[in-house]
Image (tube, rainbow, N blue to C red; front, side, top):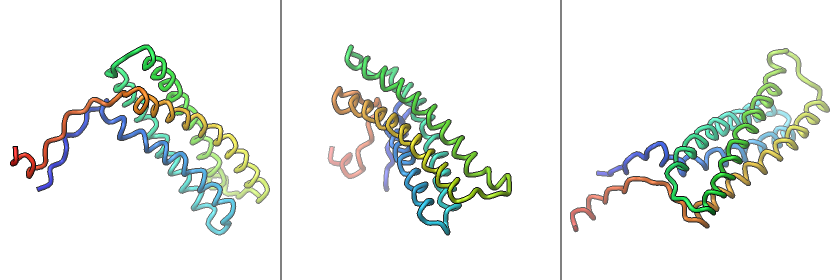
Amino acid sequence: MIELPPAPSWDGLHPLIVHFPVALLLVAPVLVLLALVVRGHRRGLLLAALALMVLGTAASWVAVSTGEAAGKLADRSPEVNAVLEHHEELAETTRLVFTVLTAVFAALVLAPVVLKREPGEVATIGVAVLFLAVYGAGTLVLANTAHNGGRLVHELGVRALMPPAPLPAAEAEKD
């Protein structure tokens, strides 16, 4: 029988959660770019990009919350404190930036449906390019947040506190 490891506590979830907003929020603009190129499927691609942004933004809220809980338990040194504080500030900024970007993108994608009027080709491309430029700046904040989180783990050795997983049944019998 397969034994599942114990479920981590809220603070232990942070390493499991943080990769979702990074991946989802970095893939979303690729779909926006595809929507500019693939005209017949523009609406579907924009809705898919919006779905990724909504999921990624929601995951960023969870990541910040679990990160705050994990940060309270981290072993501290002056260097860890400095990087952790910077990482937390960047994470909160990232969360805010993508909350605003997602709300703006939702308005842009859903406005033609609500107004029952499709914008012209030039307006659609212009707004999308402008949005992608601003979104690109947001991805730099996201990447910097992830980099500082990586520094905490890989350079400074900060680890999530999780209960040990049980030994598989075959190994437990050997002991």
